[in-house]
Length: 165
Image 1 (cartoon, rainbow, N blue to C red):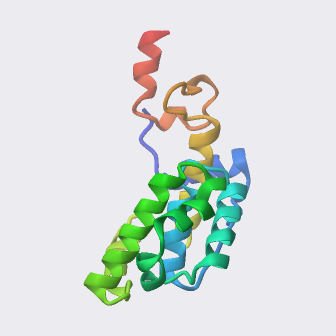
Image 2 (image 1 turned 90 degrees about the horizontal axis):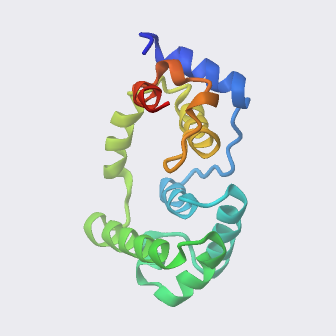
């Protein structure tokens, strides 16, 4: 493993995959949270379609989704896959935020700001999106493509693969 900075890794990922494009931006952090839940393990296209269906059926607020009918939420999310799990998660998260925090997600943002400090804040979104893209294209859990990996020299797992070759 090469001892180098995270900036080097970010530069390699940018060179390999290009500048990441954000598929959604919301001023409201709760809406961003819901879109993040929907986008797990699905394509950006299907996540956007599922979010659009959900926002056409419900107001995207902790109260509306927390009190929403689970079957209707599932129906909106069906296009995004794993819709039952995602609907249950969305309903539970929304209900918790509504019940414990009176629908105000702001107290929870302090934690995310601490996490963001781990990255240079100007690169936070790029790091996040590039790592997701890298995971989908190269660093796959079941069949990693380590030999083709542009950042394998930085990876602690690379030595494990080298022993198995």
